[in-house]
Amino acid sequence: MNDLRPGRGAVAMTLEGMGKDYGPSTVLDGVTLELRAGECLALTGENGAGKSTLAKMLCGLVEPTRGRMALDGQPFAPRSRTQAEALGVRMVLQELGLVPTLTVAENLLLDRLPQRLGWVDRGALAAQARMQLAKVGLEHIDPMAPVGQLGIGLQQMVEIARNLRDGNRVLVLDEPTAMLTSREIEHLFAQIDLMKARGVALVYVSHRLEELQRVAERVAVLRDGHLVDVLPMQGLSEPALVERMVGHAVESLDARPRRTAGPVLLRARGLRRGKRVQGVDVELRAGEVLGVAGLVGAGRTELLRLLYGADRAEAGSIELTGEGMAQGARTAARKAVPNWRSPMQAMRAGIALVTEDRKAQGLLLPQSIRVNTSLSGMQAVARGGWLRPAAESGLAQRMVKRLRIRARDTEQPVGTLSGGNQQKVIFARWLHRDCPVVLLDEPTRGVDVGARADLYAELDAMAARGKALMVVSSDLRELMELCDRISVMHEGRIVATFERGQWTAQALLEAAFGEAAPGEQGPGNATSKQAKRAQP
Ligand SMILES: Nc1ncnc2c1ncn2[C@@H]1O[C@H](COP(=O)(O)OP(=O)(O)OP(=O)(O)O)[C@@H](O)[C@H]1O
Image (cartoon, rainbow, N blue to C red; front, side):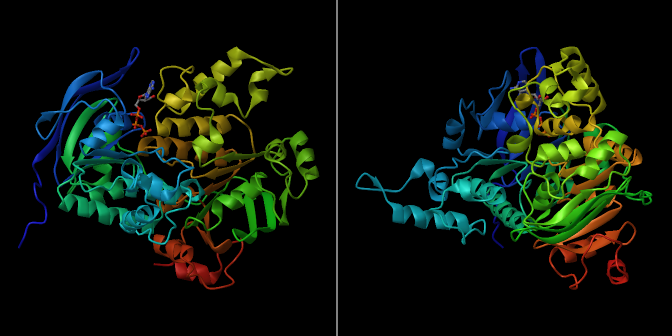
């Protein structure tokens, strides 16, 4: 039988003693590694361990302070992304590298636009773009549409398609699936298999261990900027890998009993907005965590935005009952209008939203951790309308310590933190506010396993203090670990609600795909039918 994997196993790239300093801080040191043709090397480690820094060095995006690299035996020291790409080393970035105002086709073929008589040949451009898109199952999208009009998941797929080139020697994928649906992920994995068969050396950066097990042959573990291990993936158990990453075992909360729920703090009835939210009822109780599962586009984020007043509902009502609140807040809550006029109004009434899109909605990237932490809770750090810098700084320091945010000090600009640490800053911002109702949208996207356990413990403590939490997550395991009830949305409706102890991953998935029986709607306890369906 023909070997479909030419050069598999041959060394494609070597890294020797790679290091990076930013001023006085060393973020990567002494990393020596080999990338092999036809193989996928997973790169994993805690937030801030140095994965993206290392990955970007390969692609000319970060200049190493120390070390040497070689590509196919030749010295390799790209000074820019373009130089690395010319030698067949490409990277799919976490933050998309697309130009939103250009068309999908132009983004795909920017460096090799087909020309005729000195003009861009638009017919050929569209045809070539379609072929490129078909590789990742996107034949249905219009190559001549501006890429900025696509949803974030589709943009990520375009970014991936753009980097699938015949001349690739090394392809680095940095958290490529964070925004993708399971169908899109399968297309990506199929392309990864194809590239391996063609002898491309792949580097795959991710916190999703089950993905690493699916795609990678070996895994390199970074801790505090050092390479602690390179292990074969086969036979490596998840707890063993986590232990290597974190340096200690991480406990799962899955076997935890259901929390005892208190009074209803927030009650929403018949919420409706466009096609995304079509008559949804929600009840959030003190001391309880409600999860919301569903596929991308099911309306989960839109529902949270209505509850928070970021969008206005076309119909329905939202009521804060005033239970479990301080006297002043209770009066304010009773007065609250059934439909928020703005997030400010919702926030004042006691609702927090920890958002999904940290760059667009959450953080001021050029500003420090100190400024970003105090942003939502001026009353904690201001007196008589004046900011108290010492209080602000003390608060930020406490949060950095409590959430183990990896930073030089609290003056470090948030834009220079690793992705997972940026997410922790958003979390810190809400943690110190005393909001009775906390809504969280994909709160641990990009957060490593160890830090996830820390955040879960914080959420647990918030529930124990009588707050009502609602968590939207695409990670079913996360919901199953964290929640007391899980409601599943499908096409703008809640189609099923399960209690802890009644759900299985299978039952949740079936409901998300719309396989729930009609009429299984509402925020209440699981009906006997649901409970029955949820039994293994
Ligand atoms: N421009 C910069 N200035 C100062 N420090 C920086 C800069 N860029 C990155 N760092 C620091 O380098 C360290 C490693 O960051 P990196 O993004 O490589 O981590 P990571 O392992 O990819 O983390 P994550 O899993 O959160 O994405 C972090 O502590 C980060 O704050």
